[in-house]
Amino acid sequence: MNVLKIGKKSSSTKPSIFLDCGIHAREWISTAFCQWFVKEALSTYGSDSEMTSLLNQMDVYVLPVFNIDGYDFTHKSNRMWRKTRSRMSSTSCIGADPNRNWNAGWCTAGASSNPCSDTFCGSSPESEIEVKNVADFIRRNKSSIKAYLTIHSYSQLLLFPYSYTFQLAEHHSELMTVAEGASEALRSLHGTQYTSGPGAATIYPAAGGSDDWAYDLGVKYSYTFELRDTGRYGFLLPESQIKPTCEETMLAVKYITSHVQKNL
Ligand code: 0X9
Ligand code: ZN
Ligand code: ZN
Image (tube, rainbow, N blue to C red; front, side, top):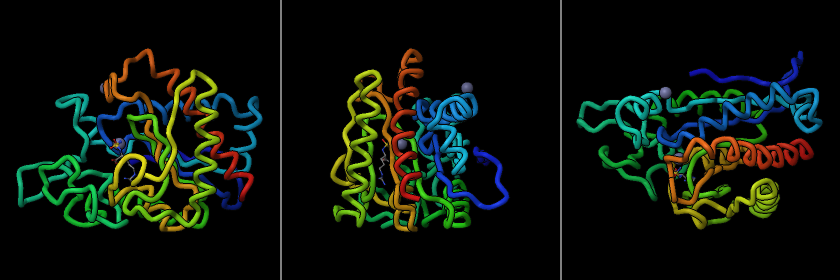
């Protein structure tokens, strides 16, 4: 797995943001967004004041494709594959849900212990090598990572902890205010409407997700984006929507990163 580190070179460790795409194999607009983000970062550094300030002050770690094997499988065999491609000796069913495999209320709600289910939580927390690798990376860089952003589709939601419980997060009101500001910024470009809120109440209770895990580790600004659309095309978002979706999402991501910078 390759993670990109984007930012102005520095001799000391800078505060950072972790951004991942493609946790779920079939959510192709997600992987498109990480590519877009990298292109925008490199091409607007030095001309856009917000991007310049961000990359001067912070590093952004971008994991362009989290679920590599699954993503490959959606191109070659089954466009609607969601999970990893790991094998277990006990069953012929393949893969676990990489967003049910984190050690955050693992497998208690909205997840399945049936290996054949699309929301299979895995044989144990971090049983999936992709999850273990990213969890290790975030644990190793925990003191520098100030925000965790993970990109999914679809539903047009901006979610934050918790999803494994209906209890409100300690920083609920700040997380909500920032999410609403980000959604408003996103909407300003093409009118795309987003709903913000804690995962359990806004989409569904689902334990073992990366956002809840990062938050409980101490990464306060932990957000899950569910990009376009609301179901007309779903995971099969047409090519014509890639650019507008990435453009509007960029505004929301920059809104969040500016808030994080202000609160370093
Ligand atoms: O169910 C998910 O993993 C996400 N939705 S998706 O349609 N992309 O599969 C929502 C994740 C929200 N956060 C957690 N459940 N922790
Ligand atoms: Zn391809
Ligand atoms: Zn997803």
